[in-house]
Image (cartoon, rainbow, N blue to C red; front, side, top):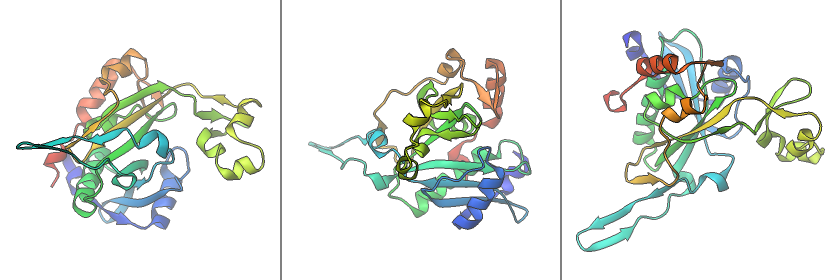
Length: 253
């Protein structure tokens, strides 16, 4: 792993994090509901940011994970359902080119360790891979996430002016007030961009269980959804990337 072991991950403020994300994320945008930011440092300088926050789609997310039955001797009791404040979405990651290759997986692993220590009420993490413009989630798979969703993109829209926007952004109150929701734009020239959206879950609390089907990673190839750094890749290329990127979360000190 080389110098990746020297990376330091720690909490940073939103002003620093958002400036880095705007400069280094392919979208050039921050997620407004990000509330917890981890900075990734090497040689004393910031080279990566991971931003966590609540999901913007509560009704579609809250039931993805549930607690398991606890069986103690003759008593069977059900743990309270997972609450909204017991999950976080890893909703933005941005890294520059300075860090060693595949450092992202190690940084995620360290951030999970920090969450376990400092936010023990968090039971699970949700994240999405943009298989239209970025990648199919190599670093999530390498970090132990489970693939729970893979579908053709319908939500990332190419606007008539060429700009890419998410329909949930267009459906917020600011756009609706001026009559320019996603529905309006779909009728006036906006088209979904080609590609796939992939959804991943990581269970911090191993007593919980995922309520939706867990997909085999081979499903990515079956649906021709392989992508890495914005380019379509073959099955062999993806396998080589996956092997190189694997990180054992339990090995992170």
